[in-house]
Image (cartoon, rainbow, N blue to C red; front, side, top):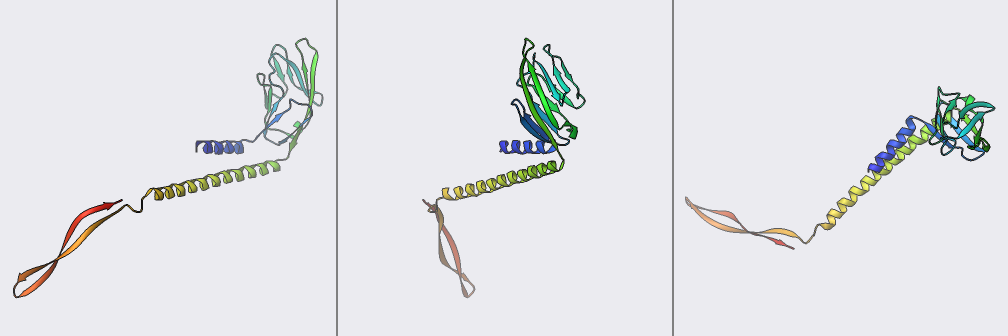
Length: 202
């Protein structure tokens, strides 16, 4: 049940703050993102002590020096984490769409790798579609767990019935005794009930 709650919280978290993850450690990757959301671009595994340049249409966006210094041209809405090589861009705009080039240099200053990826920022209409899908998923998960709970309760009830032995009956022996009472000239017959010992079979 804890796993179910965790899953629901995760889905709700994603629906509240939409974000996209794009792994661009291979050349030629296409990233489709939504206007206004946040994208996490995985540029490399670790950028600590590596010299690199990230350009968008020949404009230098991100520059990493060998000494660990990083220059970020859009630092007002982005952040770069060196130890995992992730470049986060918040509040995506149409102007963020385009081709990006990443150049990586070795310790000796020589070019070791060049990669290109394309970022496509789509209209917010697709965001509404995503929220609709997330809402449907939440409803589906809730329905699934409600059905599981009903089945579990029904099975528990059935098991309880099976464990009860139908031959285990408790009964009492009841006999009636007629007693004659002498009052006036009339005889009144009273019935007195005498209870025997309670026996249990089974």
